[in-house]
Length: 176
Image (cartoon, rainbow, N blue to C red; front, side, top):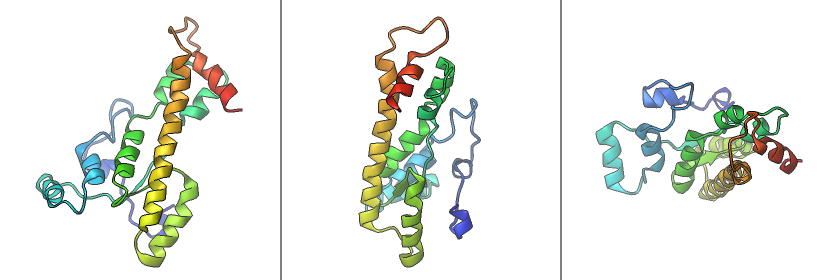
């Protein structure tokens, strides 16, 4: 969508110069990603470290987390299905970007795109107020995501013999 609006979009593999591996389990946990998100632009040592290591800053991050909640809401959800839909790198990137909200805008929901696109078209940047609001929303999204995972883990005392994870039934009830 952003590319359609004329904004430059860079895929993660282009940033890391490394392909995803282990069936997609490893792709964003990389210094070129987190360094680009966490570097404070107002700290000369941070900027020097980026330059030394060939890392570029990341000013806008859009993350669509693995659909954990939707997966565990499906009848027949197995432990393997649930585990494979727990996003690791996405929440880490979101936290990195949200922590550095003064320099990075982080979007975690498609409903945020229009506001950011409008600000970029109008002023060429995302306002401090919007970046802060996006940061708060990002931390809330990750908290809710982690809570959905935690809900099932808390009620799972052993691995079920049937391959059915109680989390799947619990989440279906909680999401109704």
